[in-house]
Image (cartoon, rainbow, N blue to C red; front, side, top):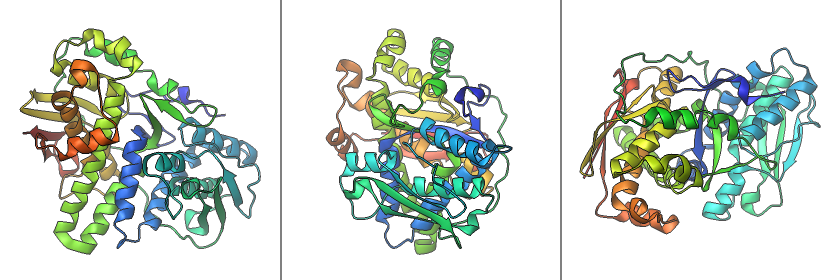
Length: 409
């Protein structure tokens, strides 16, 4: 019913769209830290946006994917989408006009939260609550504003299964206005200027078709668990958190929010990029081309330019200073689609990722002996006096032609 191969990768814009939603890959380290960052600000009522961000993106996508399909077919499509994207397993067969009480033992968010942080006292799988609300609304012809959802049991709280209850009623999560279509910034790109770029990009271009959920609905790859996010889902979490922090603390609120959100990007740069660069795929297909530390950075860029995050390149690159650019970056395009022009740079995940990459290449033993610390290694990196400073110098959401980040000692 749902075939990922039916959705080609846009090589001109380094972009992938499924059912009207831009799609990107993220790892469990980034997503769990992003979630905890938001929840730790307990003076903000974050539950409505945590569920609403998921419900909005999934409603838009499933409405397109399930158009002209029967109720039974639409249930199967929703189940397959959820599994293919790496979120776990759902059985929607018992869903009817009155909703569903759904139990599942396969949940990416609950599983990886428990792996990274241990048990908590409140359910954590807001994404699946939003997904189920969206699926119910699409399948039975309701608006999101007419759906209620609650997670009552969670594996991350010690339960044997996650239980979500979906039913008709006035929405108990955030409802967002319609979005604009994606508008690419079609400007000349500064090339990566690396002779092996095309070979590596072509090698990994089909990754989106092979990185799909296994029999448990998970995507273990590169030493982490990855999922295929709707870009607008994960970015709305960032942007709504920033807006909420402004309401609490004015200009300082967005400064603090940006620092916290960039820390999640640091984790992505350390764990995801580090996992890639210690994987069998890297050793087989990329490492033979690498002679210098700068080659490692460019090899990674050539590879991740197939992941839907835009086109990564470097205007300057050395241990002391790097200037990274991203053309049609997923954060900026998402912001423009949902909110319009921004008064401040918003590409925290990309900026943190670039900084984490510099730390990996120049401040660890990864290049010389392949060693890479785990959680403790990440903490040591973040406490190190050898760390890098990050300056977000240009932003598409602010009217610039590309994202630019300056990383310096």
